[in-house]
Amino acid sequence: MTLATGLSGLLIGCAEAEASPAPAPDKRLAELAQTAADTGSLGVIVRVEQGDGRLVELARQAEWTKDDHDLAATDQFRVGSNTKSVTATLILQLVAEHRLGLDDPVERWLPGLVPGGQDITVEMLLNHTSGLDDYLLTPDFLPSLTGQEQRVWQPGELLAITQPQDPPTAPGESHYYSNANYTALGLILERATGQSLSELIAERITDPLGMNDSFLATSGSWDPEKPHASGYEPDDERLRDILAPVVDLPEGIGFVGPERPHDNVNTTDIDPSWSWAAGGMVSTAEDWTRFLSALMSGELLPEAQMEQMRTTVPIPDEDGDYGLGLMRKTTSCGTVWGHTGGLPGYSSEIYTDDTGQRSVAVLTSTNFGIMEAEAATANSALIDAAICDMLDEPFSATGNSASPS
Image 1 (cartoon, one colour):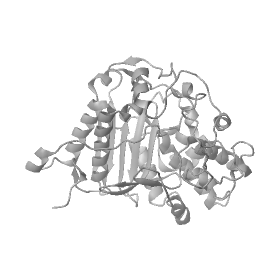
Image 2 (cartoon, rainbow, N blue to C red):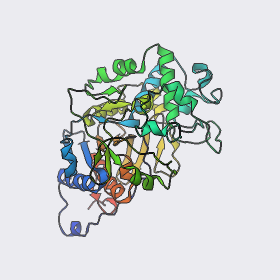
Image 3 (spheres, one colour):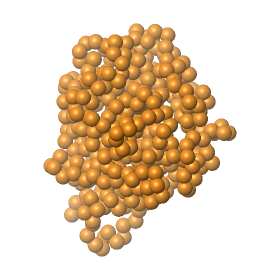
Image 4 (cartoon, rainbow, N blue to C red):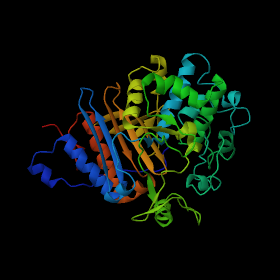
C-alpha cells in the first residue's frame, strides 16, 4: 500500500551522453538500478516487456544487503497497494454478474460498520472519494505498522478506528487516498459471495492466470519453498526526520527488526496481514505484470466494466488520475496504467500500456527510505527510464524522454 508519496525529480546529469552514443536500454537500466540501490533504494528488481518478445529482467542491490539475501529478479515481494487492482477487479466482476452495483450504498452491505455509509457508494470506495480518512498513521495503528505491536487486526476493527476526513469532505466530492476504502470493499466481497477473499483471489485471478508465486498474506510468514526479497526501513531517528514534514511521529515509534548498516532495520518479517484487501498480496514481477496485462487487455472484465474501471478522477497535486482501483500515470514518454504499492520494507510501481501488451515493474526493497531526497531522485530516474523503455520511447536523464532525431 502506498505510504511514501511525493517521489519526484530527476537530477542526473548527462553531459557525456550528448558526446557519445546512449547505452543499450538493458545496460542503462542496470546502471540506473545499481545507482538507485547504492543511493538508498537498497535493492531493486526491474522487469520490462515491450510486447515484441524483448524482455529485460534484472536485480541489483547495495553490497551490504547481500549478507541477508542475494536478490534475484524472480524473488517474491510484498506488492502492497497493487492489491487494490485485484480487489477492484473482483468487485467489477460481481457488477458484471449483477450481484452488486456501483451505486449501492455501503450501508446496504456493511450496516453500521462505515461512518456515513448510507451516503457512500461502492464506486466512491473504489475511486477514493468516500470522504473517509485513513487509519494508517493513527496513534492506535502505528505500533502495528512498525511491528512493535503483534496484533491481528480484523477488518471491522480497522473500520472502527477510521474517521471522516478533517476538515470533512462530502462523499463523492474529491479524491483522498484511504486504505479504509478497500478494507470495506474486501468485506463487501465476502458478504456478497459467501467466500473468503483468499478464495476469491485464487479462484478468479491467480489460478486462472497461472500466478503460482502469488498469494494473499495472512501473517508475516513467507512461502518456505520460494526465495523472497529482504526489506528494510530507516531506524527510528532517520524515520522521524523523514516523516517530519508529514507527521510528528510519537516518541518511541520505530520499526522492529534486526539492526543493519547505515541506520537501517530489516523489516522483512513484519506482519502485513492488516493490509488485506488494501495491500496484502505477495507476488513477483513476472506474476504481477501477467495479471495487469490480462486485466488491461480485457481478459478479466467485460468491456463495460473496463470502461468503468478506467473512468478517472483527478489525484490532487499529482501527474495522474485514479479510476476504480487503477491509476493512470502521465509521464514524458506517454501514459501508463497500473498502481503503486508500499509496505514496511517494500515499494513498487507496476504499469502497462493502455492495451496491456507492454508492461513494466520496478520493485524496491524499502518504502520510507526512498522518501529521502537523494534516494527519491535515483529511484525516480530508474522508474522513468523503465517506463520509457517499456513504451519504446527515447529516454534522456535530463528530461526523461529525448526528442526523436
